[in-house]
Length: 123
Image 1: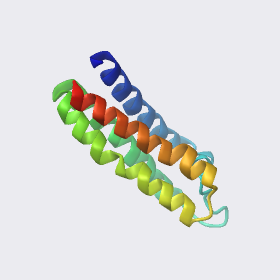
Image 2: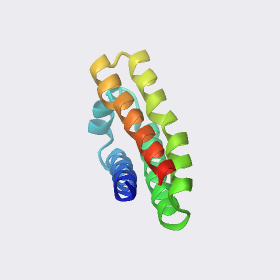
Image 3: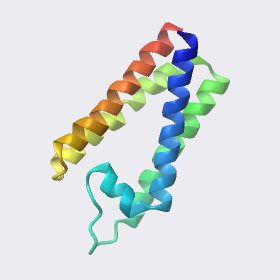
C-alpha cells in the first residue's frame, strides 16, 4: 500500500504542476479545458496566469512535503487541497459549464485527491 500511496500522490503532484504550466503557457485552451472558456473580448490573461501559478505552486508544495516531511504531512495537504477541485466543480456549474466537465473532471479529481489522502494516512 505504501508504494500505491506514494505513487498516487506523486502523480497528482505532477499532474497539477502540468496543469499550472499549461495555464501559464496556453491560457486560452487551458481555460476551455477547465470548463469555463475565457472571454475572447476581455482580458482574462492575468487571472489565467494566477490560476497557473496557484496550481504549479500546489504541485511544488506537494512534492516538497512528500520528499521532506513524509506521508502524513502530504496526507493533510491532499485533504486540504481537495477543496480546490470541489469548488472548481461549483465554479464551472455556476458559470455555464457543462455538468460533464464539472463532475467528470473537477469532482472526480476531488475524489481521487481524497482517496490519495486516505491512502497516505494509512501508510
